[in-house]
Image 1 (cartoon, rainbow, N blue to C red):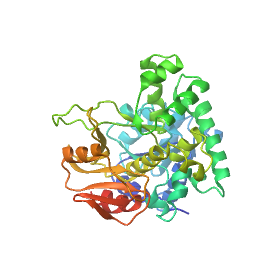
Image 2 (image 1 turned 180 degrees about the vertical axis):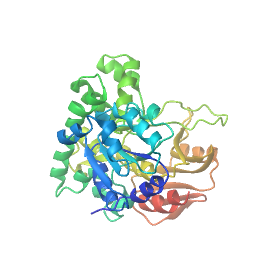
Image 3 (image 1 turned 45 degrees about the vertical axis):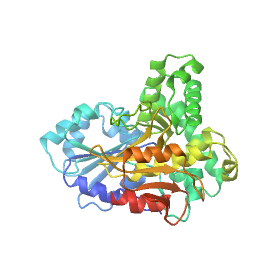
Image 4 (image 1 turned 90 degrees about the horizontal axis):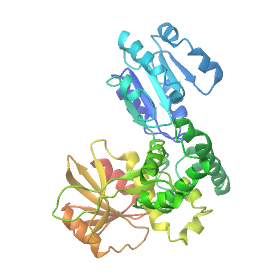
Length: 386
């Protein structure tokens, strides 16, 4: 059993907020987490799954049910299936505002969980769950985590073949059921083609117009479709660093598939050995670094990338209150070499210490102010100390 990092966070915010929202993609481990958390509670708790007909019917008279269990912690899974519950939860909380009255689980972002942003504003705090990270599984299995991704059923599968099969089924279910349930109006064929295009553009600038030209849709339609996939946590946009440094900066965001296992299945990469011989290896590793960074960065730290029209660029810029803390470049290499444009970018941004993140390495100085280190070291000793 791999211990998740979210238990302590749930306990902390549950001591103050009446409603906790646990959000993240399907199959990321939300149900497992909340059932483990239930065992730590000192108050009664009841788990209700809105995909289970008997539990669904229990909330047909939700106002009465909430009143009957006002001293318990009610855990409602797949809450997006019952958006009409949000105003009733708000009313129940306002009548009896005690900590940890409800825990809501959903496979969509707050904007797609219709009603939470408006009905529960000021009453709910969100915990965003990510797939397994290297800090959770341990630094001795980076290859398995990189290739299979961090979804528990894929990472823990007995073989790569079984992991690939699970991921194929997972992608198919998202395309054919989950995204349409969230309101995505595209056909499954269009959704798959769009998702695969995103995979080929992974770690590069997002070109929605090219997607639209290829699929026969307008630029705005593609943007709308991408927002659904992003809201379902399967794709992320990394925004460019935007402070004026007297440079002509690229303003287009970069695109990342948020789990490398999903990325590799969309690209039909069957094994880690196959990946080693493919030109997408560098972009795949950058996505792996990105997903680990986003799982562990402090809430007050923002992450962006830096690129100028003159060719200066660095993969990750870490800022707090708009002040640059450090930068990092991801390189799949045992002996990384930086391009001239990366040195220029690091100089432009003026961080005292910069990093080159490689798959695994003891830290060493590449040049003054630039340290080469492995992913685990960066997460624990750099990101963890921000």
